[in-house]
Structure formats: structure tokens, C-alpha cells
Image (tube, rainbow, N blue to C red; front, side, top):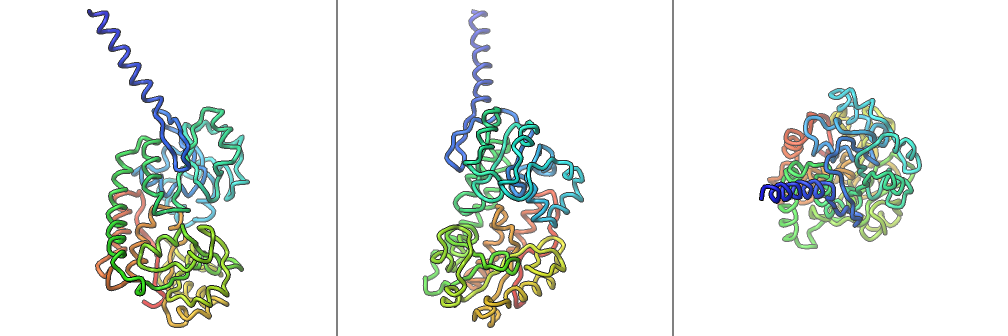
Length: 368
């Protein structure tokens, strides 16, 4: 009998061990991925996936990072500086590339010996078809795809659950999901009761004034937030993709009711809208009005009549967009959403989930 019990115990232990090794998740690209039982070295295919990782990693968001793309450091230097001040060691986290998919160095990636790689479905890092994915798989490094950029309202919660399970942070993921889902449900429920005729047309001017062309959002990206907040994103009918260059002649013909510009320029920058932890409200507002007044955007009636709002551009690539959704709703439907307090939500997000304090400005109206 004792021999039989010992054998059964051995089988149970072996089964548990096998179960841990054989955990399989379905990522946001629909791929089945076997994830390791323990993760100590995480590779981020896009540096700004750190925004999401930081929600799950508590007070030491950098501790398990084995490497990342350089886009976080180069495209959001203000937030990077905030983390660097708190965690100087982030400067020593190896870079696998600069700010584009083509810049990623496959040999560098493999030398970092990651336990797992988290990639974004689209954006600045390696995509699903990139050869690096197969190279990592051949080296027994699981690659997991998530998305906070193309379909933020559809993919954020499943992407956080995928990251939570893959990185052994399921409880932390569910805690943030409750924060996110409560706010999203409240806005969606109230928006459904708003008659279509009372929903203002909105033009999104992404990275306004930073480039010669004008870019906007179609169905997806920040366009989803406009529609969910009680507005009508005119880019839905003008762009076939979540993000892209837009024809300003068509925008002028539609004469939207609201202009929303995004930016992440540093204080004192010559072009672009200034937002981030080092920016003051006066700097944000002045740069918003300057960008909105440029030709041909400045010909819009919404701009000339002062219906302008500006927002931090990187909301488009992070679950933090739930707070921007509140700011959009309060702006576009002030009576319906009079009690919303996005400032309080922003502070709570930092207090409850992040290792840094809220600083600076992340959205502002052209008229106070």
C-alpha cells in the first residue's frame, strides 16, 4: 500500500510540474503559445509596452526587464525621465532597436536570453510576420502578442489578461481590469441613451503640427474613444485603417463640431502640442492653440469658435486611455457626464497601480 501511495504522490507531483510547464494561452493574434512556469527575464518588442507592464509590476516595474525597443526612451523622453529618476538602472536595460521594426537586431534579442517576449500586434516593434518571431520560437522563447493600439476598447482587457497569465501577474491584471471596466461600462451605458442627432462630429489631429501632413484615426485607435464618449469620429468614414494620413479637403467639407489634437512635445518645443510630466497647463494650452491654428486646420469652424481639446499622444498606445475616455466624454457631452472626474481617475491610476507620481499635464481645453 505504501508503495502505491508513494507512486501516486510521485505521479501527482509530476502532473503538477507538467501542468506548470504546459500552460498554454491564446494571444491577441489568435496564436496558441506555451508559456514558462516562471518568468524572470521579459523582452518587450516595443518599449512603450512598458506602460502596460508597469500596471502589473507594482513598485519595481523594471525588475524583470531583460531588454526593450528604444521607442519609449526616444519618443516619450519625459515619462522615461520620470522612471529614470526613480529607477536609474533602467538606463542599463539593453536596447534591441531604435524606434522601428526594421531597426530590431535579431542577434541582440537572442543574446539577452529572455524567458518570454511580449510583442505588439502593430506599431514600432516586430509584427506577427517578422522573422524574429520564428527565431525566438526556434530558441524556445515564447512570443506573445497583445494590442492596446489598433482596437483599444476591444483588446485592452484580453491583452491585460494575456500578460497577467503569461507573466504570473493574474491578480494584478484583474485588479486593474476592475478599475478599467467600471469606467468603460458607465460611459458606454450613458452614451447609448444619447440620440444620434446630439452627438457632435469630431476631428482627431494626431501629433498635430509635428509633421507636414495631417494624420487622424479611422475605426480603431483613439477614434473608438470618440465614438464611445458620445461623439462621432469623422475619420471612421474617411480612413480605411485605424491610423493614417487624412484628406483635409474632406475634413473641411464636413466641418466637425470639435477639434481634438494630440501631441507629446517637450516644453519649449518649436512644433507639436506639448504634453507630459514636465509640461505646465499654460504651455499645453498655448501649443494646442498654435497647432490648431496652422493652415489648413485653422480654417475649421470648430477651431475658429474655440471648440478645441488637446491630449497626450501616447494615450493611443496604453490602457491609461480609460482616463482620456472620461475626458472626451466630459468635453463632448458635458451635461450627461457632468459628474465624471478624469483628474481624480488619473490620480487614482497612479496611486493604485504605478510606481511614479502624477505630474504635468495630459489633456487641456483650448478655452479654460
